[in-house]
Length: 452
Image (cartoon, rainbow, N blue to C red; front, side, top):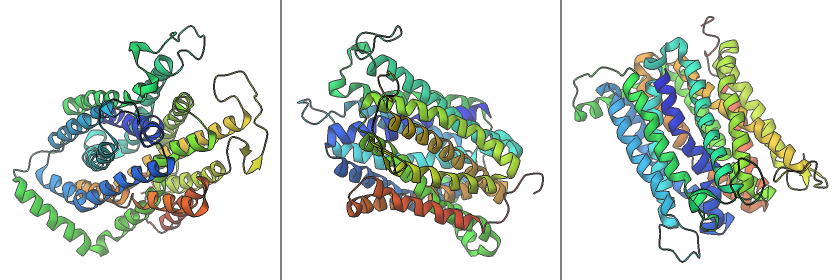
């Protein structure tokens, strides 16, 4: 189990540091220079990657079932992911006068990383039951998410102390200037997140390759495995009567995960925009929310055990709807849709006003519920399908999670332009979450393991 958990701990900081809190907001502000255009470009990369996932990921999962071992292909995926992440160091801000990688490269990396991340999830998730057993799947799923967020917290704190706070506070542990001569004006602390996450991915995969069990080789050639995997997928849909329940669950997941993905993709951009936060505040915001997400990962396994993953997931999504609705009524001078004076309530370099503290608290609620929902949704699939079909169904699971991920960004972009505000862009996201909850009410099974 430890190797499986550590692989996720090495993978997830890419999402937290690069996609949400640090690199992506910096890229939108300093490389693109236009929040609306930057948001559209981020969505464009996700859209292309989502189309590639839709076309290939179910077949990949089914073919791997036919081949047997998952770890060799997973190792290759991680090496390519690490190379692309490391390349982000050479993305330079607009008007810097330095030759480097530009906007088109970042969009390309975003698209390819979308596919690679889904491939990592498919292969890694298919190793969940071999690594932890059916009874330990819920615990390992929650621990993996918690470990990913805990690792991200450590990195965010290191970036905060070494690069963002120097020169702004007179604290004992904070140097007078950013370490290693990194220049914040060139975005070097933000760009550093690329190589850092690359190193973590490579380090995190080693324990899984060494310790975790893998499926035995079947002796099938690659061509036969792909042909057989295609036949298996056709069989899944032909035998819809026997697989109707897990397939209906994957439909529900496709819808509510579009909402989760939109919140993750644009949550950092939303926070920076409505609160007027820069890199310093976003680092602090990422640290606090990542700590809260650790709680969400640990709490999910408890909720899955107490109530079963399906009731837990329904409750987590319902609470998430409430939290997101509260976030949309927040701003530098607003709390829960009410205008207030942004008075300082304590002496701190950031998060010093009441609206900021309330927004931070709401963000913590979002982090807990989103992380718990991801963990419970993964555990629920292991309760709905036979263990020997996990590869194929986790391929469909990846499809349900990413093939329509362009839908959430598209809805956010359209609603933002129609409504004229960042908050209006998230209204359709709440609708996606609500529809997903409604569909989950019709999924059978997924209760407490003993009862099942």
